[in-house]
Image (tube, rainbow over all chains, first blue to last red):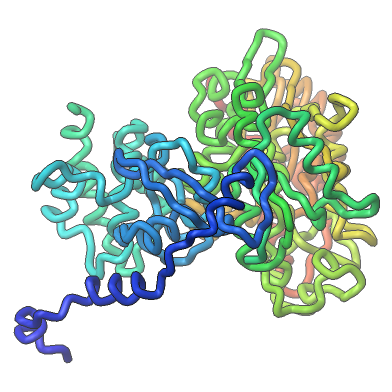
Amino acid sequence: MPDKSSSKQSAFDRRAFMAGAAGSALVPITARAAAEEARAPVAQDPSLPVDVTLRVNGKDKRLSIDARTTVLDALRDHLKLTGSKKGCDHGQCGACTVLIDDRRVVSCLTLALAAEGQEITTIEGLATDDRLHPMQQAFVDNDAFQCGYCTPGQIMSAVACVKEGHAGSEADIREYMSGNICRCAAYPNIVAAVKQAAPEIMKG
Amino acid sequence: MRPFSYQRATDPAVAVQALSAAAAANDALTKAAAQPLAGGTTLIDLMKLDVMRPTAIVDINPLADGWSAIDPGNDGLRLGALAKMSDVAAHEEIQRHYPVIANSLKLAASAQLRNMATLGGNVMQRTRCSYFRDVSYENCNKRNPGSGCAAMDGVNRMHAVLGASDQCIATYPGDFAQALVALDAMVEITGRSGTRNMPFSELHKAPGNTPDIETTLRPGELISAFSISGRWPRSVYLKARDRQSYEFALSSAAVALDVREGTVRDARIALGGVATVPWRAREAEAVLKGQKFDDGLAQRVADAAFADARGRRHNSFKIALGKRVVARALQQAVTMEI
């Protein structure tokens, strides 16, 4: 069993370590000239990186990436926004859910290049200053997670679920949240959280 | 995932040109070097699995301005191929005049996937046969023509009982296509020489000896719209599955009826989850038409729908289940308030 008290006191930060390790392995891509002329809509040489500007949480981010990069990998590996989680990587679990132009989608099946010019909102973009978004607060209040891995996807999906008008009953919430799988089965608490946050979100 | 070039098609001519330029004359559409990208929920998934290996992706999402209209009129309905499943499912007039369409879409996939997936891509989605999706199984006539079929003697609980051949028993997985085939929809196809229309029922091909050829579309052709004549307010989509939500059908039925004074004047029945293609049950319709509806008739119609069904080791239950789904869908359609 891990010793909770010692892990709390430890100065070691797993995320900072992981991000640092990943960052040091990333070599800035400078071969831009060829990529520039290869910009869409003209088909480019697949072996060259492609320049793309993604708008994430209200800010433009310029990237030079392999055309195969998904929005999820662009967020996690290139922009260090590791809130969106990679569960199945095949659109089946919902852990990677983000909003694109205010609609919930699975970022693991969305090519970053195809998302250019659209507004991407991730879990990192929900809170304002030091105030949690009502849905984040509702998940805390209702203990709507155990391990937490599916939670960012659940929360993004839940925000959209409410705005779509699909949170009017518990049956609706269950139906319209079915694309987010929780292996810990915190479902009753997730339903309670969505119910709690819905009126506040609809108030605006 | 294998490398590919990415191209954004800004108008239909560019898309068609890019898709046909990369095609060899004898390419099966599913093996064509260039593939169109719409919602991506099938294509990107199968590329990650190495089942599909295009070298060029033509992103047709910029065509949505012209190709995503939802147009219900007094005489019929036109749906743009790039309309999103979620938008069509939520459209009030579709729900009122074509409940079979709205519900087939609402009961498919998840809210996220329905926001991404387009109608055209939805009907082109590929089978969920686990042997097809896993390239470590060498014998799949769909992926490797002539290699055999791992499902025949494998775990075939999810496989088809109608329309199968001794080459392939993979199930057509979708829901919306059953609504289209039931309502005699037409599909509009855009290609190099302009647009053509054909009955939607002619789009999908039963596996026969060429399970790798799934549709009659040719490389360089794109679905641009669907159209349906008339309105079908007395229509139902019923889906039986292993869990309550977010699951493919074990058996489903799209039913549309015209009932006057208890007599069935017109009847349309299509089956999902049980067949290799979106399956129109014409023999069952013939049993139903012109008759006074009662539960005994519903049972005879259901029996007719599965008269030619052939079960295998693990999927014979679909015949009994499918009959019950048909009978219940008919009962729901007859009794619904419109």
